[in-house]
Amino acid sequence: MIPLIARCTFAAAAALLAGCHAEWVREHPLGCRLDEQLFVRDTLYFGRSIPGGGEVDADAWRHFETDVLLRAFPRGYTELDASGRWRGADGATIGEASRIVIIVHADDSTSETTVRDVVARYRAMFRQESVLRERAAACVSF
Image (tube, rainbow, N blue to C red):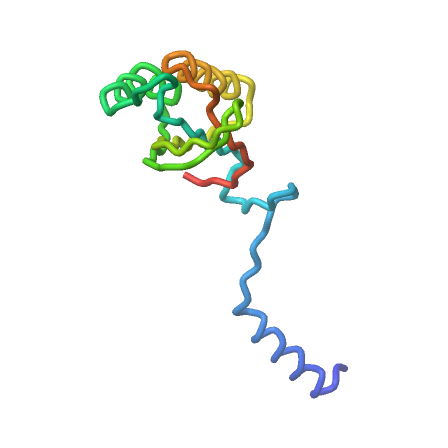
């Protein structure tokens, strides 16, 4: 028979632990919760200054968005206005207005090709030296 003190200790511990909440996680490096999926978040930085003069104005951006972004990412994306500085190949530091586009997508070859195509099309359309791409893993839920 279990002594009374042991039974009381067990009952008290069980009562205290009943209010605890354990979060189960999947076994992968980010530790996404069970209600989340592992995706990729691409953040693209599009400079708006055009080499040789001019800027990607609202009409030109809207055209790029309609013809390229909306078709490439029909499930959606986030767009932000920004300003920043970067150093060009010639060593000069340039300050310019820019647009940041954030896309969350599956980590697959189709998505990778689509992102690369969007970057290449922007560079060609507006004679850009580069488009900064920041790629990171993300735990997401919808």
